[in-house]
Length: 412
Image 1 (cartoon, rainbow, N blue to C red):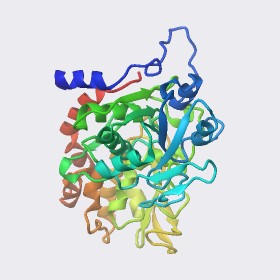
Image 2 (image 1 turned 90 degrees about the horizontal axis):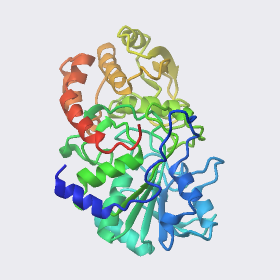
Image 3 (image 1 turned 180 degrees about the vertical axis):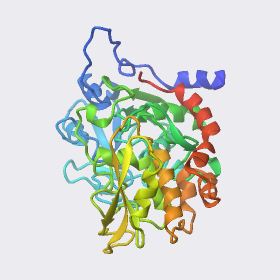
């Protein structure tokens, strides 16, 4: 990054006592994870003192004892909370994929709730201005995949806050599928949509606070005044169950951390005519279509993919593709989470589904190109490429992104 850019960032990003985790000693026992919100509250909300605060959040914005942070902050006289901003699925999480809750007053607090879904740039800046806030706080649990829209809500809010002259505070939460490494293809800018605004990898391996720094440093035309409240007690190798935090589904089809573990690979089936398991109790772990039988599980098991087995499965989705029809396919069973590579596994499943089922087809709008970030995956699979050949096709771009990503990592 250019020195002038670093100087500009230094001018717009204030240093606070909460941005760095206290140093640990070799003899010190591992501490319980504390989220950004827990640290903010423990510090008496000093970052928000004298500010008119609006918060971007959803049902995942909860304390350890599952109280919603909006309810907690609204009841605390030290915080002047004046507005809530709801993302896709809504503030209270009542909307399905591709929906939101609109503008309303929250019955529990009386606070005005503004809809941010599909708003960006000046229209979203106008929402912030109309709300009367001067500080926009972000606290949403992410799942670690580029096409999960909450990180782009964060990006859009940062851009809009800069346009509206607002300050942004990001409260960090764990990446539930670890932050060990970035994996998968990198988005090409001509394929930018709300499931991928900027060129990051399909599985980014970052927390939302780290992503906020990346967005500010690499992608926003003018950086926004940004402060982040880091976690303590989180390590990059931690899966979600190591956090001790309750899991609240970030969206209706993300019921468990197991779903999040496979999602960055199997969400690609949204771009095909196969069911990605929506309408079942195991979305993104169950995949299938009418006419598929046990040959698919056998074929993909032959590959010996690390950390995972595939079981022949039959299921009847209650909504979405093949609603009410019993179909055949596979269920993913991850037996070694450290070895498991969700993106490679997703590609292997696409390759083998095409080999064993004559009915395989991409969605007519080539949605899979938006999900993978280019035409590379689709055209390679159509040309008969193996899993290894498809994966090899993005390694150079991935290596370049990993070098950039490294500059913004906050945790060891």
